[in-house]
Image 1 (tube, rainbow, N blue to C red):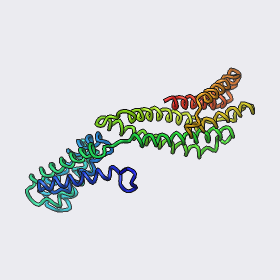
Image 2 (cartoon, helix red, strand yellow):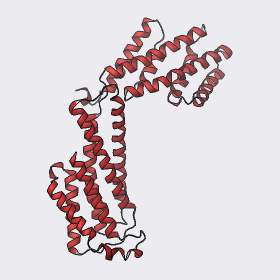
Image 3 (cartoon, rainbow, N blue to C red):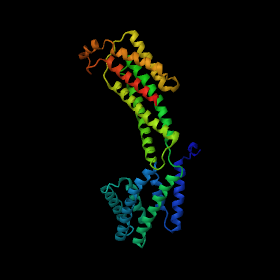
Image 4 (cartoon, one colour):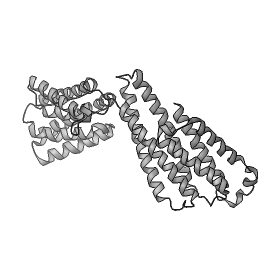
Length: 338
């Protein structure tokens, strides 16, 4: 229910819980909660695994920032040079030690501590380490037990949209080629780039879910749904590859007969419809069209390839187009087989 609210998501809820618990624990120890709260907020990652990994980096980074804040305020007091040296030395040290994920938090910690430290520098340093630990632990525990991340539904939804978008692009690209508009393919390229970005987003969510499964293993239907989504993404990525080949390959005008052209147009239309609407996919009809395309591919193949010297790719456009179309047909068969 929380995920459906337009202004509140699971991350917002978890952030609120983490902030409250962190501040409450710090108040119990009579420690300033501000640094712990900042740490808790930035450590709340999309997965528990990421929270732990980045937390292990941010802890020493924050310690470095705290150390330089204490060091330079003891040398120069609350002055501009103190802020400058604390920030510069913290950044340089974190960069040198490859603590990139904690660099920003460490730098903010260093400059913010200067304003609140007035005496007892060593005690202030250890209190800062304590508040950092509280923020890291609380945010990780909250991420693990309060509305734990589950991306299976989002992956399935995005994968379904990507499938439909792929069907639209298949129709558009092949129609442009068959209508001899291959050179005017700027729109096709933009559509393919948008699809590529969607596939990258799905791949990111799948990575998140795999990481999360180490702490919250998927079971039953959710596990099957996730496995299907991974397999479907592989097929969509390969279809994208074949479409990309078509768009960026220089093609001359194909020399099919009207009958052959009609067969290909019908095959493309059926393929696009079956991808845009799962219910339109008919396995027997799909296989029949696939076999028609295969027969067309091999028909007079020996005679066509003898003339390949006339083409810049050393292959005639008829064979290239049919090969890519047949490959996509095969991938769609595998897509719906799972």
